[in-house]
Length: 118
Image 1 (cartoon, rainbow, N blue to C red):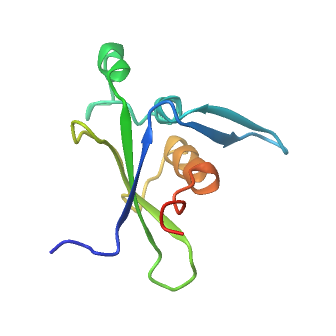
Image 2: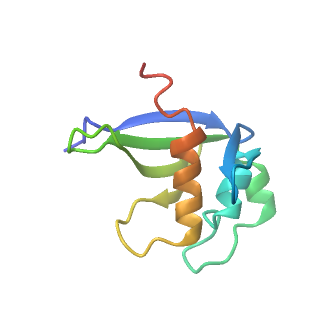
Image 3: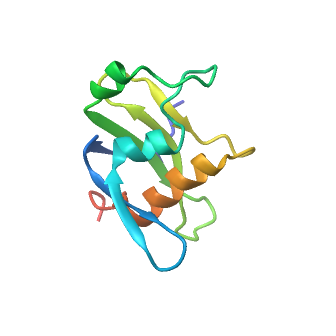
């Protein structure tokens, strides 16, 4: 059965997003660069997706929902290529890498996930 609590926002791969740095600094990079920096643009064996394929990514979908405990917290469930359906990130609840943290934290802070649901 489909989870009706899931929400989705689609950003262009060139959407600019903040990345928090040590101290008060924030830098801006494209959403596609964030996924690459976080290691999400890789195959199942860990090898990076060929640059030619990365260059063809135009729209990235972010699937999210509110935490079930009524805290208002947001969970990023999945990030995928909106045209091809290729999944770049899935919430796996354990063994998160630094790259996973980088991607999710940036999306939660600067991704405007709730903007179309206000």
